[in-house]
Amino acid sequence: MMTRKTFFIISILIFSYFNAQEGTLSKEEKKIYNSIRHSREIGNTDMETALELLLKNNKEASAIGYKRGELDSYNSLMIIYYWKGSYKKVIEISDKTGKLAQDLNDFELLADTYRLKGVSYLELGFNTNALPEFHKALKYAANMANDNSRHLQISTIYDNIGGYHSN
Image (cartoon, rainbow, N blue to C red; front, top):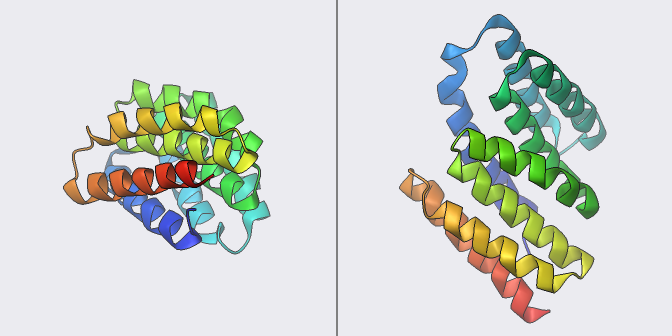
């Protein structure tokens, strides 16, 4: 199954994409962006505080129509919920996350959303629900622009599919 180290590496690759957008943000968006970034930094050691910040960031981003902030906070929430073992929460917010990622044509976060949903189903023992999610994740991962990120995401998805077959 997925280790924290692998999750951390994928999170860093995804967040490097966010760094490229920092210069085009309004003052309110930049505040939310920086708070999400801070939440990701502390999420490995202080999950509860990170969750509180991310939920607040998500609400603020939604209030001002900052879809990228909503998406980034949802993605971060999914990762932390997964680490905490709150697999049902991952599944609950995956549709909202996927919709936002689709609206923003973010294939990287689409792939990550469906992969996280798939591994959450596996962790809950719903193996038959997991495989279709992994196939969606592969479909979106194939469209990722960055070669290194795409290869890492695809290999991680196949690793997760291996978990499906070993259950």
